[in-house]
Length: 382
Image (cartoon, rainbow, N blue to C red; front, side, top):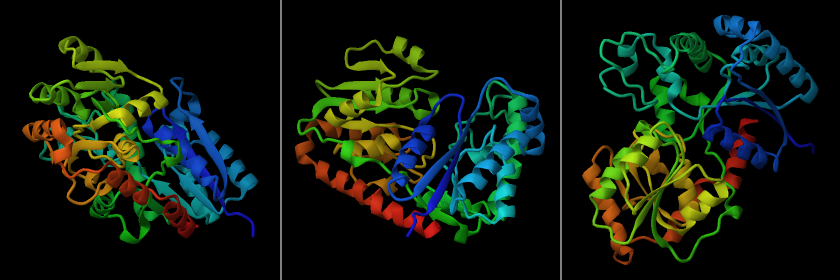
């Protein structure tokens, strides 16, 4: 019997992000079970005449031709779509519908709903800050400026998102969410429940080695920005009673320089952006990783990697985060309750008195992200 064929479709972002990394890893995973091909385009700062036209009609003539040629050449059983903004655009869904090719679309984050609104008030509803994208309205701001540096780009993605949402609702596609919480939100937005599947991103556990001796370090790794709550982590750290511990902050972002200048302490170390192997080594040796993200997360990569390495995670209990941990997990804190975060950090003083087993969290995440389970889910889609 010949292997089933999957064509993966993705538009790489201008600045490489976690979603891009996840897709490459998933491509490698699927290649073990199916015949896989990859159709991708890269965004650029230079926009041509076809891109400009595509922004307004939500279909790119050049991209469509390349995609159609790829379909005719590869003849996939399933087309598996990720990001389509902006080079690929949405015209590919019309092609897939006309050709009656089975299609699955994975939604990696919650931002798709944020750009649906032209006005800031509609975006935020009754909240001060959007917990899906981090948008915060300024005084007297009327327009929903989704892209902070551009009204034009914000207007163009508004046009794109309206069409994208119609495709989610009306096209014969399978939608993939990363957790049950996200699935329920999609249903609340009017998406048919029967179209939604929950399939996690795979992680290659074979490359992960548990460090038997944990050191007195706590690691934050990721973007250093307001919505990730790094400032709140540092302030909470300063209020703990931890002795001989260090907080390692790995990554880059718009808040890095200011936070680094403001926090000149021996027990808080900014390491900048590091290669993934070095980051994983730090996580493996750490007593814990910590995040105070203010956003809903699809599949929290830092926490899943920590569990895979037998390292505990301290995180805010909201959205779908708890789905990746055992029941009655002791180290999650109430969202926005930073005194509770301090309490959880202080528990690191004596882990021997706590019901924590590094192999339990590893076993739990291995079961959650089982390769056999994810294969069966994709096989069912086909």
